[in-house]
Image (cartoon, rainbow, N blue to C red):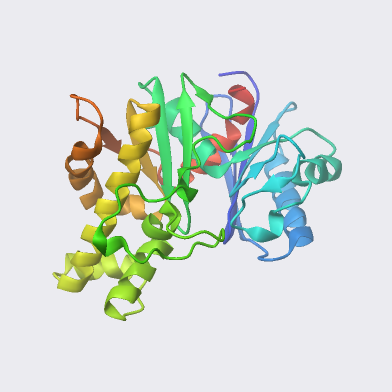
Length: 303
């Protein structure tokens, strides 16, 4: 660990969370506010106000890292692929640096999550980690030997907008995704995708949490929905394993609280893993809901 305080911001679609890590990596202070949905300028102001509060009484040389639900295009420097669509096409890095009068680093929120868990979380003893966020959306981040793997398009690990592999009869017709395509992993395995599938199948409008609660109480319909979700998630993860071959997978986001996934996924993935070694490690996040914002704080330590 380098000797300076670190500020991390998680700019989400519904909330903005912030922390300041001390020299030893422990959280010294926290902040949380609602995200001004649809309003870019107010989002900028909210982030800057939070950073200034987190900087109070901090030592000099504090670094600032920010996770966003999209990425920065290496070609244009503008936000791309954000499901918080009011950020897309905006010069977020330049605007923040102008308002704060200092440098900031931005990365995809799933990359931040994966970096956090690889640094001092569930994947800290692994060379390679695939971090998956299963929440409102479906993100992914790849970390190899402590470094985020990205490339010239700034979308490394973005499995959420690839199609569901090995589709079955019950997977048709494919649902529409917000990105304009159909059948994306996000439209199947995110929390909103799980809820939408339940509505299409049974005509009941329930949240993912409500479906999980009903399944735990023995509801047959809810258990069918969760079984289909686990099958689709397993096939999608197996497709990533056949390309990246990580030491472990760490699940994050609201659906990472569903215990049955850790029991069922390894067995469900096995038929699709192209190797004689079918074993796979699937872990819950060590840092829970704070993993993404911790990863943002680590961005300056992991170039």
